[in-house]
Length: 410
Image (cartoon, rainbow, N blue to C red; front, side, top):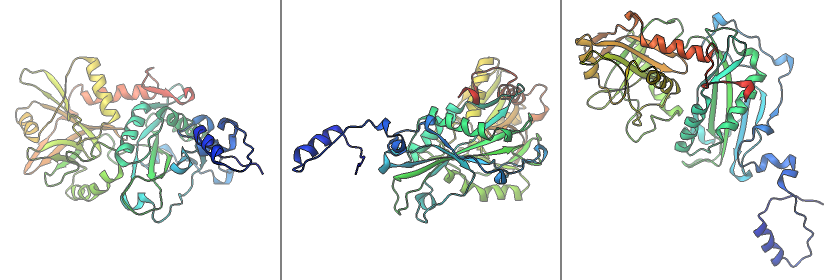
C-alpha cells in the first residue's frame, strides 16, 4: 500500500535514524500530488479554482432594473474558500451554485461575532466591459479587519482574481444600466465548532453577489435628514470602529429606528464631550464650508480609529487634492463648528460617502434643540455632485482610469 504524507526533510531524517524496521521511502514533490494540493495550500491560489455550475432548473430569473432593492436579489453562484489550520491553511477556492451554509451550533461566528465583511461593486461600462472599483483597497481593509478579529489573512490579489472569476460566471446579472450595479459582498467567518473566545482554527471566506439600484429606496437623490443625538455612540478610542465587522452594525439598528420614528432618514454619529462628528449612518461624512478668508474648504473626520477608512472617502480626498481648487482637511470636526458655520452662512454642503450610495447629500441635521437646514442642494455647482459625476465616469468606463479594473484583465 502506498501512503502519501507531508513531512519536513529534517523530520524525515530523524524518523529514519530512529527506525529499527526496514523502510522504503520515496520523496515526491507536493506539486506532483495534484489531488492533495488543496490540503497543503498555505495561501489562496486563484489558478486552482474549481467551478460547479448551477443546473438550468436552478437558474433564477433576473429582476427588472427598475424594481431592484438593495440586498434583496442574489445571483446564481457564490465563491467559497475554506481555511483549516490543521490542513495547512487556505484550501482550494470553489465556485458553486448559491446555497445555504452548514455550520455547527458551536461555530465561533455564532457566539462571539468573529466575522467581517466588505462591500464592493461591479459596473457594466458604456463599452460593455465590466469593471470593479479600487478592489485592492477593499482587500487591504478586509485583511486589517481579519487581523483585528483573529481571523486568517489572505493574498489580496489572489482573492481579487477569484472574485473576478465569480463575476464573469454571473456576468449577465450585472445590470445593463448606468443607474444600477452588481453589489459584491466578500465575507469571512470563524467556523471552528468550539466554545471559548479565541482565534478560530477554521474559517470560511465566501462571496455573494446581488444586483442593486439605489441604496436609499424611495428617496432617490433627495437630500436626507440626520438626527445627531449625543446620547448614542457608535465607536470609541481603542475600539474597532475603523474595522468592517458586523458587531459595529447590529447595535446601531435600534438608534436608526429611533431616528426614523422621529422623521429622520439616518443618524449622525457623535463622540465625546465636544460632540465630534464621526459618521453619517453607515457613511463617511464630508463638509464643505467657507473659511474666514472666504476660501472653500472640504473637511472630513480624520482616521483616528473612530471611523471606517472608506474607499469612496479616499477617492474623494484623492480627487479633491488633484483638482486643487479646494482646501482639503482631515481633522476632528465638532458640532460646535458646524453650528457656527451655519449661523455665519458659511456652511455650503454636508454629504455622506460610501460604496453603497456613492454620495448622499444632507439637507437637515437635528442636534439637541437646534435644527440646521443645510443648503447642500442649493449650490450652483455643488462639490458632492462633481465628485459623484467623476467617480461614476470612472466606474462606468466613460473615463479610462487605473482605479477601474476590468474583470477580464484579472
